[in-house]
Image (cartoon, rainbow, N blue to C red; front, side, top):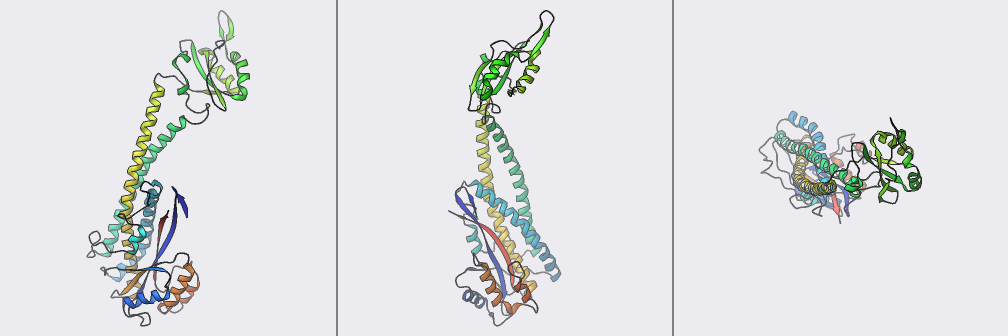
Length: 389
């Protein structure tokens, strides 16, 4: 479990299993008897019937080929669903977490009904799988583009905000510099220095000697205008000074300043810059908020579409595996089981009541423990995220 915006987000799972009807008299000759048998074996466990229509089977070769592809496609679709789920959960705008047409994903799963309009059963199994794969692939590509665009805006905002944060040795000094603090001419320039508090006394005593240059008439002279150091701002760590220097001595002054543990700020005064920076920050905050809202709304809608498609893919998987395992014509009962914290007990019970389905020697797979995902009955896991207030 993890915390997301004050809500507990828990990863949980359902087991989608299927059992053949009438193949083993002991298990039941009708779907109702199969269901009753499960209810008696696991009376305290959350479970639901899953109604899967009779889909077009095709050839055995096509089924086996599709079965090999389905697991890979399922992993891809699940990955996209969970990425969308993450965007919706972290956005937190709705306050209720991901939904499928306003319904909790778990509720949608337990009340599953095949969507004939979106996925017509007259289509072949391969066509149905391609519909789902194409839908999710397009969504995945669009998600990548939208995330890239949003992160670009977010990065620009972060850079703009960082200018206003931190100490005077790194934060923007635009708010502290007025026009009359700056001296700029053919021969003079202004240097801005962030001086550590512990070094201010030393700086004020020595800065006028930092930087000399040669003249024809007067020989070597100091390159700093005497008394030009002026404190413009101060925080808990640094004081910001401006110093006026001759351009011929500017480079040497900066070198001496750095040697004296002073941070020389690279700054050029521009009239109206502070207001422009504030407007830029305001613009980016608004842009980021709008982009975040759009991404969340798109993710909410896309999650709903992809989750619905994903559950249909799970239904196709259980149908294909059931036909391959139990034969034709398709006659099986699909059931959803939510083991919760009782995985070991539930698995042991299922392995016991359906042991009659095991081929000779297959009991060994049951003894391998929960790590083994092959059982005498069809078993497909559905992982999902539940948001708990």
